Amino acid sequence: MKVSCLQENLAKGLAIVGRAVATRSTLPVLSNILLSTDGSRLKLSATNLEVGINCWIGAKVEQEGATTVPARLLADFVNSLPPERIDLDLITRTQTLNLKCGRFEANIKGIDAQEFPLILVPEEDSRLTIKPEVLRQMIDQVAFAAATDESRPVLTGVLAEVADGKLTLAAADGYRLSVRPVGLEDADERTISVIIPARALQELRRIAGEQDQPVEMLIAPNRNQVFFHMHDVDLVSQLVEGAFPDYRQIIPSNHTTRTIVNAADFLKAVRMAFIFARDAANIVRLQIIPGADGGPARLIVTATSAEHGDNVSELDAEVEGAPIEIAFNARYLIEALAAVDTPDVSLETRDPSSPGVIRPVNGSEFVHVIMPMYMAR
Image (cartoon, rainbow, N blue to C red; front, side):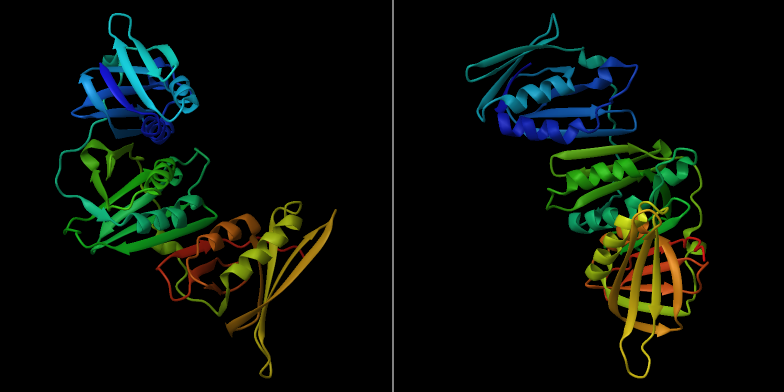
């Protein structure tokens, strides 16, 4: 293999695939990045057997070939080089990759490319197309609600459901639920329901951040994989096996109080309350007071720390229904409010022991259900 490419392109490609490199593995080759020629481009690949990423960068290929080299060592060295041309030359007999850039040179010992697991791409033609900005927003509004505890593997994933011309993402961890549907222009009659690891979607979010062309999504249940194709980047992820809870049953069908408040002000008030709530099981109390005799309605946010003191924030609001006092986990509230994409947000409540529902006002169909916390009197 004899290839030349620009330092900045190689550094960018290594950053894209680097997050899929296995950090703890019994297979040494999984700590490596596969470099292989592909036409007039250099292909970089990495996998931890759950997520695999392929990335292509422009290159001048003089001699075809492939090898794998330690990911961290290669990335650290390339990032240290000046922004000039890098020449890569593989000594096949010893699997040593020689790199030259200006007056800098290194020899990196690798492992034969044949030992690297194949990152297979499904061949089916029926793909869903999603705008990158919509996909980024959907992941931002859903993935944070997935569980991090591995005791229930299905909850560490995000349900991806295709039905009735819509793609719906849903995630839950037992204390909260996030749901975000979006209409599809190219959906066929198939109904698909699979669980994608939240970590894979977060990697996709990172990569899609620089994309401006539509992202193609292909679910291959028979191979237990989901595949995302972007400009010069592919991401393949294993699916999570199991049955996801019926999220529609979790969303309350009615409420007695609906409170509309400025989303940024609400988020700021909860963040301030969290400073005190950290020492009190993250409990933040919301007191919702309808307007009386033509006066303004109010939302009062409070947190109390037995050791350090308390905090009170008062916000103007629009309240339909009865007054209520309810408590939530401050961190969960912050993450939900940060995902709202409109100036105003609504909070629907029924009673202090029933879930609250957060929705954007005049925005996307994002729905977030959050369980209340017990309030000691």
